[in-house]
Amino acid sequence: MTDASLNTPGAGPAAKPKSSLAVLDDRTKRRNASEARFKAYGLGAILIGIFFLVVLAVSIIRSGAPAFSRTVLDVEFNLSQEQVDGAEKELFKTKAYEQLFIAKLEEQLQASGMQVAFDAGAIERIVGKTGATIREHYKANPGDIGKPVSFELAASSRVDGYFNGRVTREALQDSRFLQLSDLDLVDALHDAGIIRGSFNWTFITGADSGVDNPGGAGIGASVVGSFFMMLVVLFLSLPIGVAASIYLEEFAKRNRFTDLIEVNISNLAAVPSIVFGILGLAVFIQFMHLPQSAPLVGGLVLTLMTLPTIIISTRASLNAVPPSIRDAALGVGASKMQAVFHHVLPLAMPGILTGTIIGLAQALGETAPLLLIGMVGFVARGYPDGIAAALPNRTRPCLPRSIHGRHAPM
Image 1 (cartoon, rainbow, N blue to C red):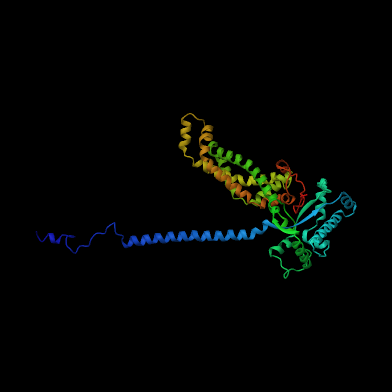
Image 2: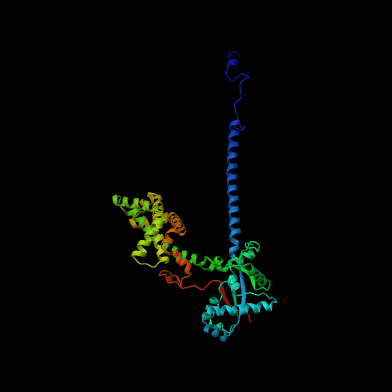
């Protein structure tokens, strides 16, 4: 053994040992700690988002739950033919029916042992004008004359707020809508079991209401009107948009004309919705003389607004299909039409449906173009007679939703 071997680098006992993969060094520990902190930040962000989502849902449910309940009056009628004929002979027929209603209400209070004085004004402030409602029911159902019929009348929004805690005796000020003395009658009717709470089916099935009775408004007519418009939009925009996209992407030659069409389609997608409403007002109503407030007109306006979105998304889906699919179909003898409709279009269908759903969702949330063509009138008048009758705008006048006549059990 020579002295040279002792001077070899790394051979002496003072040489530093190499690092091992089984042992984490400081740099790796810092990197792992950084990744753990990043995961914790992401998890914290998700938890915060879920917390605010729960707060929002609870707030919506708490604020919207009272809309599904309402206060109603149960009054049983058994009008004879003589009473109906006498009311019809009066000059003010609805006033005569209101007097009959007040008499029946007094009978029910006396039968319950309640002695409360009230007048027609107090009844009108509590349940509204009942004379016209009762008269319309007996005119529409003459067979109910002489039979026990139970009416369920919705109380006014302020009476409903009194039972829900929104209106208190201390904060109430006498007005044409409700007076402090009316609450004594309301309490007596509640003690007699005439006023009670029930599920508000009117909110689901009812139509629009006036400012005097906002609690009587419903979403039923609005939902039906939106459904009819979406049917028009779907059956017009989907085939037109898909056909235009297939032609531009698969069959049209690249020239200045097609470039101009593509630029205009992209520009139409960025046009504000109010412009489409002005276009629909000028073309469909002023020029073509189509009826206002019809789902057909609203669907045509929303179709024009939805077409650019569907065309752009459909072209992107067709362009995403690999060219090898087209080449393979043409190589085995398929025509250009067969290659597109049998192979390319099925593969692009998920993207087409996604673009269609996005376009319909955008159209469903638009209000500005519908206000210009008077669609609010369709909502206010109530339900149409049917799908076919909704297109030419033949709507029937709806009876007030606050009353539902039904035969009382014998």
